[in-house]
Length: 102
Image 1 (cartoon, rainbow, N blue to C red):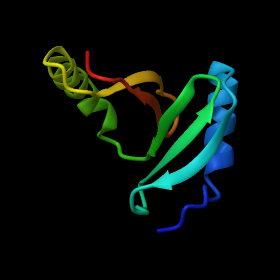
Image 2 (image 1 turned 30 degrees about the horizontal axis):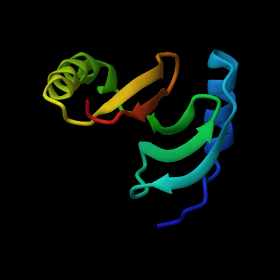
Image 3 (image 1 turned 180 degrees about the horizontal axis):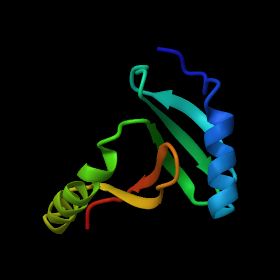
């Protein structure tokens, strides 16, 4: 697995900067390479975050279910990702922070 951000990172970072005003720098690529998605660890204006790019057409359909499931887990004290921003234009870009259990 390559730790380099890859050719898609500049486009993703520019989109986030344009929509949110956040400046993010990639720390590492996370997970395996897939044709329809990429995941990065990044640092910047909102702190350390996970940025996920997905070209999956069903991502929006799962978003409601995922939000409900994560809220239930969070209520039980499980550390879960907290969405900070989700782009709904074009490719789906999700920026999230992992919160510590309370």
